[in-house]
Length: 270
Image (cartoon, rainbow, N blue to C red; front, side, top):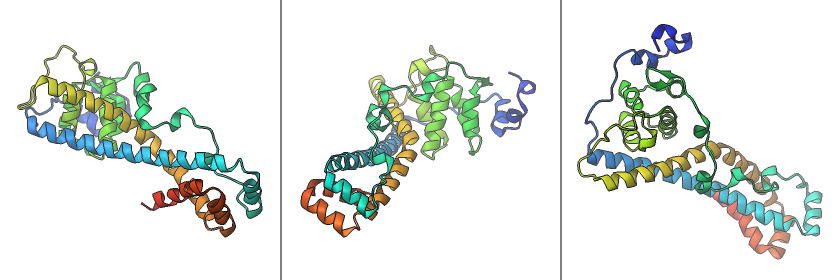
């Protein structure tokens, strides 16, 4: 595609301007030790986020289950109406659904990245990836690296770097280096070698990064809605747990469930 053939919105994109040059990713800027350090840092960042997102959902599920059981008690339901707690947040009453499963189950359902059959390319770079990166100070070398992988992988790498707040060359280098052969722009290209890392270790790193990346992106996509549900649930129980009559009834008749409600408030404070 020539520059004159591009829509005006793309011609004015500063990253597209870089693509009119013959860009290639800088060579040999990330050797074996650097690859390992960046890989481990990325993996740890994603792992912690996934664990935090799962903890939020687990807390919500535990509280919803406890409340569901307590609501079988007619006396408690009547008390809720009398004390002005009849309107319960929907996140505490609706049935479990696929989008409420732990992030560990993300591999069982398709992601948005898997439904793109074709991508428009500008000098070898996917337009969607360019659009994602347009508001970031992207080093030109990153665009050269993205050319090495397929369009869907370009989008995924852009999403990962943005979500980690790490749109940096060394992060892109690792994400490209550990891309599976099936996601390379040229599947027959010779894979790069890194000092101190053998082929079996590279394969293990590639597999591990693919797994945590999928879970991480799923967590990022779900986390905002989960936090909003957590806030709604917390506000409800914050009011409820300040009602002496309801607290006495729960503590006397449902001590285990009462503990779950208190854990929600403690979780929000952490």
